[in-house]
Image (cartoon, rainbow, N blue to C red; front, side, top):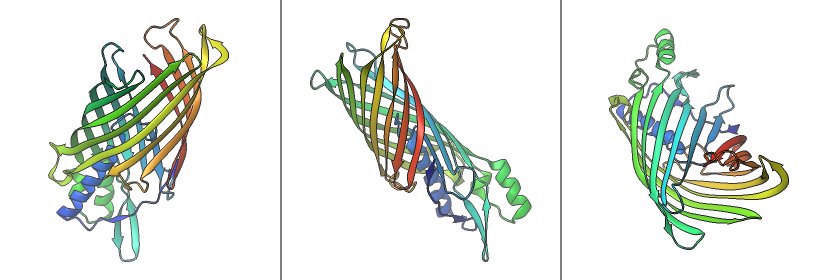
Length: 299
């Protein structure tokens, strides 16, 4: 579980500029989960003020070439998140938290093409697109406000937002496969511009999702056998630098991950899911630390 202390925002500041800032902030949160990334694939942040997390983010994604002879690259990510911006109603010296969680679902796709530099190294430009929907727990929040405070907050009552994103990525992909060791390294830069559409006037916003990431994985056969193939030991490291609107938005500018696990080779019995990996990861950054378990399959 990651730990970070959130600031609180007075409900009484309901001007247009305030609403725009709130919408932009929610769009920024969406920007953390647009591409396959082990550092943000399963993220939970708690301010430490309660049992419930202020941000929960889970995504499922991946990408690969169609084949070595046809280097069309396809990727996709489906992400779910739940975010509490911690609104408060400041009355004199009192400060009362109001429950106002936002729930989002986003789908991102990418289409690229591999240009070989050497036998092991490829340059890969990718065109990315995203569609998303975000909605607040309006029924709970509105009921609380109507019963306890004489406040009409359009930002909550009209709490639905649709968004789309267009942008791209560039990647250097290194693959060195030998019988005694398989090495994968990816260096990637992504920039996707997000914008709302068909949304309430109170929740129109925009953000730029920019990141630079380095990911590396080594797979080494072990003496153990399963499914008529050697079990592979997996070692993995990753670092993601968040740029633009994402940098510092959650209290950190980067996240790192180290992991280890096992991989089963199913090629002898299943021509579709040829490999299955189970990886345990430790993730860390400024004021952030936690663990996760990842399950992946290769075609």
